[in-house]
Length: 153
Length: 153
DNA sequence: CTAGGTGCAAAAGCTTTGCATCTAC
DNA sequence: GTAGATGCAAAGCTTTTGCACCTAG
Image (cartoon, rainbow over all chains, first blue to last red):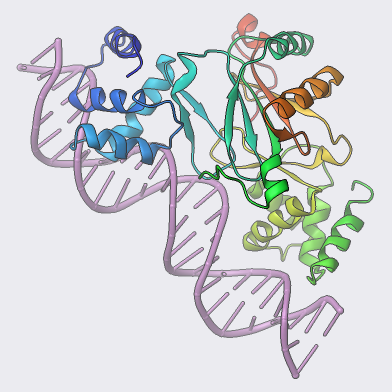
């Protein structure tokens, strides 16, 4: 599990007068025991491997807590369900490239784009705080070989 | 209605051996009679003003056709429903800035970001074709005045 | 002891689909 | 005439919620 996350969540929970439970611990452990993106349903499955008593409702009730705490990022890639990204702790400024052909998601960082985002945001009257950026593109692999090796979702 | 769109859609339809109907015409007219973004439900309402016989099912069946034809862009801004953008014909390279506070969506174009997208896409092994970019940011208005004038959705 | 948490199953909300009827070509 | 389109209502899917029971502090 990613270091520090559990502590950050506990502090957040405590500050709000909420409680620490076995189920929440299991969900946190599952959520940050991987660097892959996942859906709510997938998180439920992972959490249940750790603590079988975890229910779907509790997962759905805990997800907003983790997002609100700032440890987990909720994303929407145009699929029918939301996707969660546990990598914002390790790489707070990473961006996403999503392949429109095969749905592959590549995370990347780039200094120039950071700067550009700041400029554009300010120009339009927005504060560059808490921004994120995503590029949709076509997969070279698909065009060349008719299929994409890392087809996902 | 945006010029050329109807023709483009008709050609697309014809090529696929599909048919032109009163309902589809009304949906196209509604979809491109505005420059605002809209949901499927909103499009249904607009189309019914033109042709009352349009049903929800036909709207949902026609949306993928317009998207597949390339005249309409489907977007997902993390809300519970999809949003459609009819402005890609007039401005094929525009990007979106979405305010995380008030959901305001600002469209903008930027030469530098175009270049940067190309570089990054290629670097990661993707073709820059059909890319789009969105920035999420915080609204200055909200921070200053506690509320945002153009609160939407 | 009690405010907060949990599981279950039902409900909600958007989107899709089966089916009988209709219509563009 | 026939493949394709439509409307209606039912079904699907993810996510939310009401409720009775449980538990951390």
